[in-house]
Length: 91
Image 1 (cartoon, one colour):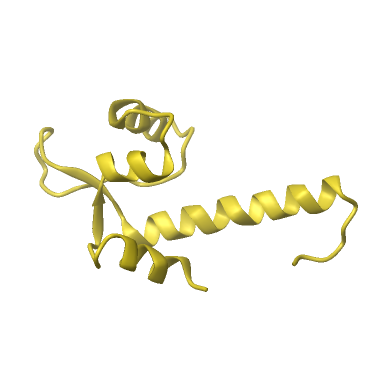
Image 2: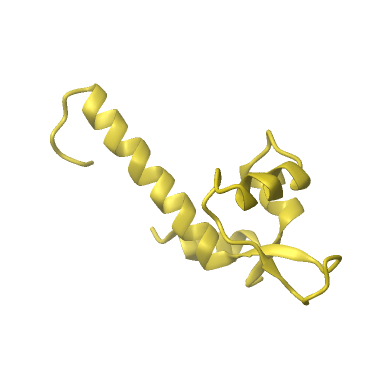
């Protein structure tokens, strides 16, 4: 299953997903402002896209960037699970 395709279906093919929706769906413990601060400080490695150069312009996350981030988080979780359980293969 391809994460990008799942996200395309979830967000009706939108290329840029508004920060509010990203937080609502994947970072429920963060407000959009807190999410933005964590991204800017490097705590969350996910680029934010501005739709215009203005500070007040709409901000979002590109669908493929979110898909890559989710896939990397999944890979890290599988690796940790395998190490904790003494597994040498990835399922």
